[in-house]
Length: 226
Image 1 (spheres, rainbow, N blue to C red):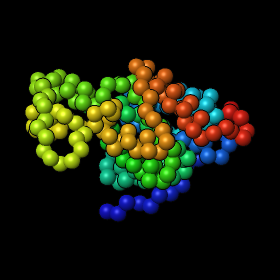
Image 2 (image 1 turned 90 degrees about the vertical axis):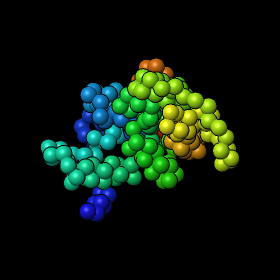
Image 3 (image 1 turned 45 degrees about the horizontal axis):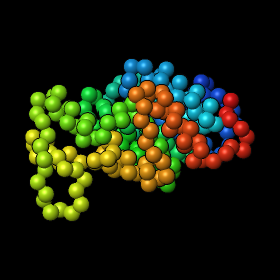
Protein backbone atom coordinates (compact mmCIF):
# COMPACT_ATOMS: atom_id res chain seq x y z
CA UNK A 1 0.00 0.00 0.00
CA UNK A 2 1.38 3.39 -0.91
CA UNK A 3 1.59 6.20 1.61
CA UNK A 4 -0.99 8.90 0.85
CA UNK A 5 0.41 12.26 -0.26
CA UNK A 6 0.72 15.03 2.28
CA UNK A 7 -2.25 17.33 2.18
CA UNK A 8 -2.90 20.62 3.91
CA UNK A 9 -4.21 19.92 7.42
CA UNK A 10 -7.70 20.87 8.40
CA UNK A 11 -8.41 24.29 9.89
CA UNK A 12 -6.75 24.92 13.23
CA UNK A 13 -9.14 24.13 16.11
CA UNK A 14 -11.00 26.92 17.86
CA UNK A 15 -8.89 26.70 21.01
CA UNK A 16 -5.96 28.20 19.11
CA UNK A 17 -6.52 31.99 19.23
CA UNK A 18 -7.01 34.05 16.11
CA UNK A 19 -4.07 36.35 16.88
CA UNK A 20 -1.74 37.47 14.12
CA UNK A 21 1.79 36.42 15.01
CA UNK A 22 4.70 37.50 12.88
CA UNK A 23 5.48 35.16 9.98
CA UNK A 24 7.76 32.26 10.81
CA UNK A 25 6.54 31.60 14.37
CA UNK A 26 4.27 28.55 14.00
CA UNK A 27 5.70 25.67 16.01
CA UNK A 28 5.10 21.90 15.88
CA UNK A 29 4.61 20.44 19.38
CA UNK A 30 6.03 16.94 19.12
CA UNK A 31 6.56 14.08 21.52
CA UNK A 32 4.91 11.15 23.21
CA UNK A 33 2.47 13.67 24.73
CA UNK A 34 -0.18 12.68 22.20
CA UNK A 35 -0.32 9.20 23.79
CA UNK A 36 -0.71 10.40 27.38
CA UNK A 37 -4.09 10.26 29.14
CA UNK A 38 -4.05 14.04 29.72
CA UNK A 39 -2.95 14.89 26.18
CA UNK A 40 -5.65 17.49 25.48
CA UNK A 41 -5.12 19.47 28.68
CA UNK A 42 -1.34 19.19 28.33
CA UNK A 43 -1.39 20.58 24.80
CA UNK A 44 -3.74 23.31 25.96
CA UNK A 45 -1.27 24.45 28.62
CA UNK A 46 1.61 24.25 26.17
CA UNK A 47 -0.28 26.37 23.62
CA UNK A 48 -0.76 29.00 26.33
CA UNK A 49 2.98 29.03 27.01
CA UNK A 50 3.59 29.38 23.27
CA UNK A 51 1.25 32.37 23.11
CA UNK A 52 3.12 34.00 26.00
CA UNK A 53 6.32 33.57 23.98
CA UNK A 54 4.73 35.02 20.83
CA UNK A 55 4.44 31.63 19.14
CA UNK A 56 1.54 29.60 17.75
CA UNK A 57 1.83 25.98 18.86
CA UNK A 58 0.26 23.25 16.74
CA UNK A 59 -0.10 19.74 18.14
CA UNK A 60 -0.33 16.59 15.99
CA UNK A 61 -4.03 16.32 16.88
CA UNK A 62 -4.64 19.66 15.14
CA UNK A 63 -4.16 18.01 11.76
CA UNK A 64 -6.09 14.80 12.40
CA UNK A 65 -9.73 15.88 12.20
CA UNK A 66 -10.25 13.73 9.12
CA UNK A 67 -9.45 10.54 11.06
CA UNK A 68 -11.63 11.18 14.10
CA UNK A 69 -13.94 8.23 14.72
CA UNK A 70 -12.08 5.86 12.38
CA UNK A 71 -11.26 2.40 13.71
CA UNK A 72 -7.61 1.64 14.50
CA UNK A 73 -5.78 -0.02 11.65
CA UNK A 74 -3.39 0.41 8.74
CA UNK A 75 -5.53 2.87 6.77
CA UNK A 76 -6.12 5.07 9.80
CA UNK A 77 -2.47 4.98 10.84
CA UNK A 78 -1.21 5.97 7.40
CA UNK A 79 -3.72 8.83 7.33
CA UNK A 80 -2.40 10.02 10.70
CA UNK A 81 1.20 9.84 9.49
CA UNK A 82 0.33 11.83 6.36
CA UNK A 83 -1.51 14.44 8.43
CA UNK A 84 1.42 14.81 10.83
CA UNK A 85 3.81 15.20 7.92
CA UNK A 86 1.63 17.91 6.42
CA UNK A 87 1.53 19.72 9.76
CA UNK A 88 5.32 19.59 10.05
CA UNK A 89 5.60 21.00 6.53
CA UNK A 90 3.38 23.89 7.60
CA UNK A 91 5.30 24.74 10.78
CA UNK A 92 8.38 26.94 10.98
CA UNK A 93 10.10 25.22 13.93
CA UNK A 94 9.69 22.35 16.37
CA UNK A 95 9.59 21.73 20.11
CA UNK A 96 10.28 18.09 20.96
CA UNK A 97 9.72 16.11 24.16
CA UNK A 98 12.67 13.77 24.79
CA UNK A 99 11.23 11.99 27.83
CA UNK A 100 11.77 8.22 28.10
CA UNK A 101 8.86 6.27 26.63
CA UNK A 102 6.95 3.24 28.02
CA UNK A 103 9.14 2.95 31.15
CA UNK A 104 12.23 2.30 29.02
CA UNK A 105 15.35 4.41 28.50
CA UNK A 106 14.61 5.58 24.96
CA UNK A 107 12.31 8.34 23.73
CA UNK A 108 9.28 7.83 21.50
CA UNK A 109 10.70 6.62 18.14
CA UNK A 110 8.13 8.54 16.13
CA UNK A 111 9.34 11.79 17.69
CA UNK A 112 12.91 10.86 16.74
CA UNK A 113 11.77 10.48 13.12
CA UNK A 114 10.12 13.90 13.28
CA UNK A 115 13.33 15.50 14.57
CA UNK A 116 15.18 14.14 11.54
CA UNK A 117 12.42 15.20 9.15
CA UNK A 118 12.26 18.80 10.36
CA UNK A 119 16.05 19.05 10.62
CA UNK A 120 16.28 18.06 6.96
CA UNK A 121 13.94 20.96 6.20
CA UNK A 122 16.40 23.35 7.83
CA UNK A 123 14.02 24.40 10.62
CA UNK A 124 15.05 25.46 14.16
CA UNK A 125 14.50 22.73 16.76
CA UNK A 126 14.53 22.76 20.56
CA UNK A 127 13.98 19.90 22.99
CA UNK A 128 12.80 19.48 26.56
CA UNK A 129 12.52 16.70 29.13
CA UNK A 130 11.58 16.09 32.74
CA UNK A 131 14.38 13.50 32.97
CA UNK A 132 17.76 15.19 32.73
CA UNK A 133 19.82 12.06 33.42
CA UNK A 134 22.38 11.12 30.81
CA UNK A 135 21.29 8.42 28.37
CA UNK A 136 23.74 5.80 29.76
CA UNK A 137 22.33 6.43 33.24
CA UNK A 138 18.82 5.83 31.92
CA UNK A 139 19.93 2.57 30.29
CA UNK A 140 21.69 1.39 33.46
CA UNK A 141 18.58 2.09 35.58
CA UNK A 142 16.32 0.33 33.09
CA UNK A 143 18.55 -2.76 32.87
CA UNK A 144 18.64 -3.04 36.65
CA UNK A 145 14.90 -2.55 37.11
CA UNK A 146 13.70 -4.71 34.19
CA UNK A 147 16.32 -7.43 34.06
CA UNK A 148 18.36 -7.20 37.25
CA UNK A 149 21.52 -6.85 35.18
CA UNK A 150 24.29 -4.27 35.56
CA UNK A 151 26.25 -2.67 32.76
CA UNK A 152 29.86 -3.66 32.21
CA UNK A 153 32.89 -1.92 30.67
CA UNK A 154 33.14 -2.17 26.90
CA UNK A 155 36.45 -3.40 25.50
CA UNK A 156 37.74 -1.13 22.69
CA UNK A 157 36.89 -2.56 19.27
CA UNK A 158 39.11 -0.36 17.16
CA UNK A 159 36.15 1.11 15.29
CA UNK A 160 37.08 4.76 15.63
CA UNK A 161 35.76 7.27 18.12
CA UNK A 162 33.71 5.70 20.91
CA UNK A 163 30.24 7.02 21.75
CA UNK A 164 30.22 5.12 25.04
CA UNK A 165 32.38 3.07 27.37
CA UNK A 166 29.85 0.57 28.72
CA UNK A 167 27.74 -2.26 27.31
CA UNK A 168 24.71 -4.20 28.49
CA UNK A 169 24.46 -7.93 29.22
CA UNK A 170 23.80 -8.62 25.52
CA UNK A 171 27.04 -6.88 24.54
CA UNK A 172 25.23 -3.88 23.03
CA UNK A 173 27.11 -0.61 23.41
CA UNK A 174 25.53 1.92 25.78
CA UNK A 175 26.17 4.96 23.59
CA UNK A 176 25.54 8.72 23.60
CA UNK A 177 27.49 9.71 26.69
CA UNK A 178 26.92 13.39 27.45
CA UNK A 179 23.42 13.36 25.92
CA UNK A 180 19.99 12.88 27.50
CA UNK A 181 18.91 10.67 24.58
CA UNK A 182 20.33 9.05 21.45
CA UNK A 183 23.05 11.34 20.13
CA UNK A 184 21.39 11.60 16.71
CA UNK A 185 18.28 13.21 18.19
CA UNK A 186 19.96 15.68 20.50
CA UNK A 187 22.72 16.21 17.94
CA UNK A 188 20.28 17.27 15.22
CA UNK A 189 18.60 19.64 17.68
CA UNK A 190 21.97 21.22 18.43
CA UNK A 191 22.99 21.36 14.78
CA UNK A 192 19.78 23.29 14.05
CA UNK A 193 20.88 25.97 16.51
CA UNK A 194 18.79 24.69 19.41
CA UNK A 195 19.40 22.85 22.67
CA UNK A 196 17.61 20.53 25.09
CA UNK A 197 16.21 21.91 28.36
CA UNK A 198 15.75 19.63 31.38
CA UNK A 199 13.66 20.32 34.48
CA UNK A 200 11.81 17.93 36.83
CA UNK A 201 8.60 19.82 36.01
CA UNK A 202 7.86 19.02 32.37
CA UNK A 203 5.82 22.20 31.93
CA UNK A 204 8.73 24.31 33.14
CA UNK A 205 11.12 22.44 30.84
CA UNK A 206 8.76 23.19 27.95
CA UNK A 207 8.52 26.86 28.95
CA UNK A 208 12.30 27.23 28.93
CA UNK A 209 12.53 25.58 25.50
CA UNK A 210 9.69 27.70 24.08
CA UNK A 211 11.22 30.95 25.32
CA UNK A 212 14.60 29.99 23.90
CA UNK A 213 13.04 29.09 20.56
CA UNK A 214 11.19 32.41 20.47
CA UNK A 215 14.47 34.24 21.06
CA UNK A 216 16.13 32.15 18.33
CA UNK A 217 13.39 33.13 15.85
CA UNK A 218 13.87 36.81 16.67
CA UNK A 219 11.51 39.64 17.66
CA UNK A 220 7.94 39.67 16.44
CA UNK A 221 6.64 42.29 14.10
CA UNK A 222 3.15 42.38 15.62
CA UNK A 223 3.71 41.63 19.32
CA UNK A 224 2.71 38.43 21.13
CA UNK A 225 -0.12 36.34 19.72
CA UNK A 226 -3.29 36.90 21.76
